[in-house]
Amino acid sequence: MRRKDKEITELQGIEEIMRRAKVCRLGLSRGNRPYIVPLSFGYAENTLYFHSAPEGEKLTIMRENSAACFEIDLDVEEVKGDNPCNWSMRYQSVVGFGEVSFIEDPAAKTKALAQIIGHYTQDGYELSDEAVQGLTVFQLKIESMTGKKSKI
Image (cartoon, rainbow, N blue to C red; front, side, top):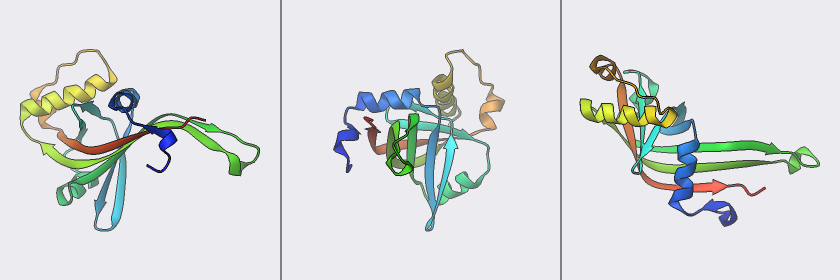
């Protein structure tokens, strides 16, 4: 990271951002063309969990290339200066890299979906077998990640 003064070096600080964030942007690539999509997510034990409809562009790309990156941010706020060239942003963010894989086992899918649901609500929900079967569930095992926080 170029700006060491903005780096978050402790895993606890990085994970706090991930706990508070509501959107994870997943970056994929097909050939030399990038593809990014915002997703709801869950996080536990160095793994991000996602769900999807059974078909779609991101799934096609992931089946061809499992390498992925992600970005999560929160507390984004513009900081105005004397002129637009002096404006800046306040933020906290996490960027990371890893490999995606599909979760096929029904019990593992249910556990991953519970992780996603738990990220957004503490209300208990029962997931029917039919609902779980109708979803594609995948995970990103994080190989590396960095946190950054503006100090403006």
